[in-house]
Length: 551
Image 1 (cartoon, rainbow, N blue to C red):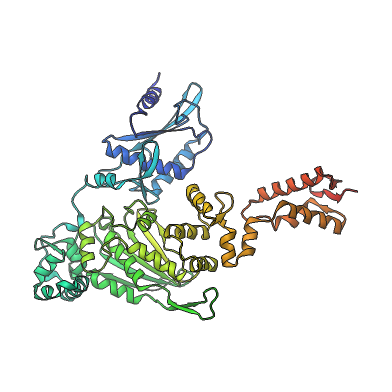
Image 2: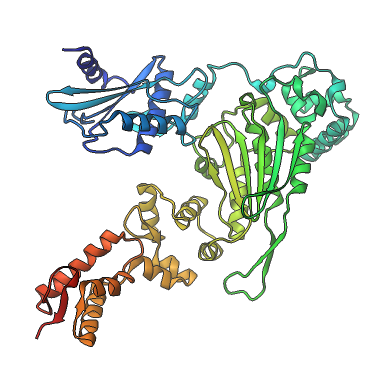
């Protein structure tokens, strides 16, 4: 028995006692996104158990551990492509330590060695951190996240800046912070008015024990001392204004103090009014393209959650009716959807001291409800929900300032009782994006969607509400009897039809969610049934086939 066979035997033996090994049959193929989820989960579990690596094994039945073999990719080039895919979609960027294909009892087995997550840094895939609960892949729990984060150095944002003095702070920024603090805590107004700057900054937790921190300089420090914060930090916000073609029209770069830069950036964004008719109303609805709260919340989230040690600036991009906000660093919570649906403060923050200070001066929501409020404001307007892209070790959120899908907007207007969870899923369906089978089944039980998974679409009950009956028919199609009668009537009218003519006649009205191959198969089945019933016959074969009515 060689070393690789001994390794497989070892993994088979330890699989019942650990969450560090996952077996899959993967007889012919396996979804790359699923592999990425297992990579994240096993990497994080290896970190938590203090071992250098975990294993994903193909060609072994997960329940019985019987070696069944796999035909999963077999060339070096394809393995390298998979490794590149994993490295591009994980944060921090990682990939397999080793890929070991072996033969065992004439069956091919592939062992993927997955490195443990770095100390203090959970591994995410597509922006989500995964873990294991028994045999299931789940979002990494807050307890496990906390355990991993506790391995790292203290909060970066709370570190002292010894060379900085109170003379390095911007007096205008401190005044703005005072007024914001009084607005946040109106019962403390008299006390705030009596505090000197040192006391106020300490009470607002902009300083720590009377000493200047990186948070102090980020929020109220003078522009000229930004270099004191950290050699790797680039404390800037860039607003880029582009035309519809993506060409630059104008730009603005702001640096510290960020408490002033937020308003500077927000005021430079072109936030025009937008008019549209709601279903059943003759009076146009007039709203701003971008709700001021959403602009500030998205921008302040970038400041609060930026990974300043990466050395990137914060980017804001205005392009017509779209605003995009980008900050460096992975998205720490389980998922955006979880944050919106659970509506609770996060247990873990990248810059905990900075977040708390920003909350005290009203820059971010203290109860963790800011993101949910952004979703609700877009929902109330009937605009698409915020779009998050969490790939490439960054958080990118796009806000749309117009109605893109009127049908979807009308659903939101007429179904105000829909939960935010349902709205998020329907938003994805309206954008032709895939949802999980579990979520699809849940929406189907509520009669909100139809269609064969994964090509689901708005159901007839929803379509009837929004007046999209034609669109529903295009997605759902007609009953088979209607197609058969159409073929018979057309043959009768023209004496005969070729297969090509029948394909054109019926193919244009078959369900829109069918592929071309599925449409051809459907037509073949219709013709076969008509022939078996003795209603039509074929006098030629191939593309020149000639179908006629039976005498």
